[in-house]
Length: 155
Image 1 (cartoon, rainbow, N blue to C red):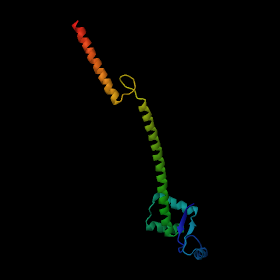
Image 2 (cartoon, one colour; image 1 turned 60 degrees about the horizontal axis):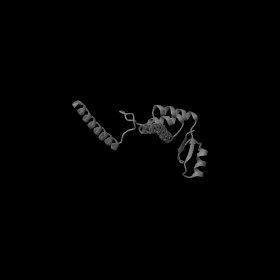
Image 3 (cartoon, rainbow, N blue to C red; image 1 turned 120 degrees about the horizontal axis):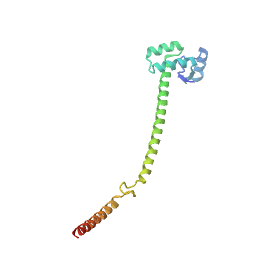
Image 4 (cartoon, rainbow, N blue to C red; image 1 turned 30 degrees about the vertical axis):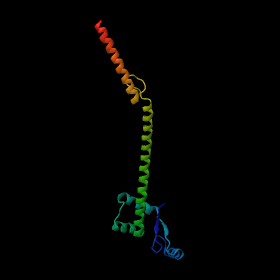
């Protein structure tokens, strides 16, 4: 159930005797007032339609529900804060799941990169040094084959 804070000097939902006893016992401390289920249902229904009621709307609600306008004002403030927190928690949960999914995808890509093969020969991938060495070797082999081809052409 929702709790609303009502200042010790104001009305609240308590009777006059309870109010006076509360004021004498607490001297400036806040008392708590539980709203009835009917009050909460009506406040919730109004909140769905209008989360930021103006002064006139709060005054009308206070008359209908038998609460002070301050109680209505604070209930709406608390409800907006509660709703915002719930939405943030839900958003964070979605973002956490998305982050976890991306991290798993990132890990899978890293693992796949470890197992990359050379597209031309099917062997392991080349580093820059290996590539340069392989290129020199191929150039030497190409020069040697050219010599052989020109020699056999002469024969």
